[in-house]
Amino acid sequence: MTFQDFLAQIQTMKVEEFRAQTEEYFEAVISREGLDPLHKILTVYFGPPLKPEGHSPSGKANRHAKPHGGIRKDQTMYFRQDGECAECALLWPWGGGSRITIKVIQSKSSGPATGLSGFLATLFGRK
Image (cartoon, rainbow, N blue to C red; front, side, top):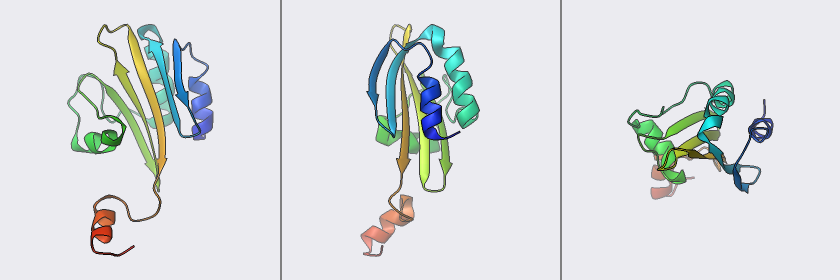
């Protein structure tokens, strides 16, 4: 399944509010009643969550979520990386608990110089 096929599958669900959609980003609000079907779709695509709701985020989850607003204990994060392409889904429950914001993101690195090795290469003038 491609990322676009995955996004199309999510859009078949009942969505209360569409917030944003591009080829690499999707954001919407769903009701808590739609959470179980959403988790099934996300698990088929990503596998189990990197950071399940109710668990403290690991260092890896924090690193991957930071560019997208971070991750808290009450939130869920799905993640997968295939070469230079990273994809994640973030589920952020609202304070009242009846609604959840879902953000689905695909990001592609600009080349092999990513992470600490990319930072050091940039710092020392190597590409």
